[in-house]
Image (cartoon, rainbow, N blue to C red; front, top):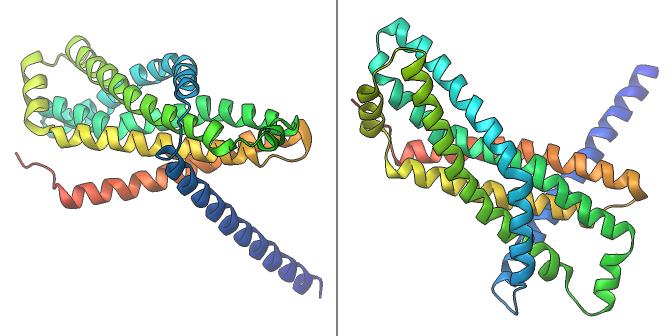
Length: 270
């Protein structure tokens, strides 16, 4: 009887959690559509978007560099050891560069945007919510989606694309320096193999991924911040939930985008 009661409780809990997940996903999707629509209608708060972009750069640029540099070293070490085992040292440039451009840079940007800028956005909007500032904005006849959400989405998307270029440059240069200085690689073979296998489509894919990830991180952070309840404790919970949800969705979307890209643009063959 006790086991049956526990099974019934577990089933109800799973059902409730699943229903809540669907409601949350639907609400985020609706807010995303509403924010995109309002970006192209009415007066856009340019000053707020610039302010948020600068804030995102300040909280994300240094951590991004600190992650990108060791990431390039790690990729170089792992690829170099495998290449040495199969006798393909001359292809290390292609392996390092393509891995950093296609996968490393967008993932690093996504994690830093969600963990640094996204959490700050969620905490800011959540604090405004519990202080009734959001309600005051609505009472004054202003739209929080247009005034607060839209500029943050634009800022995260633009900064995400710019940070992607920074990560690619830092990762490729670090991998090159480590390969030449530590792994006794030759500069010519590294650069020539990278140029032979990397393509502009890889860069376009990385920038596109970064834009999508920045959009997702901004929307989720804004949604959780605008729907805070329970005072300061609720703000902390919303920040944690926004980061976790963003991380899970980012890896899933990255897998889908990568598979579509590989299908449409098959890898080059030597």
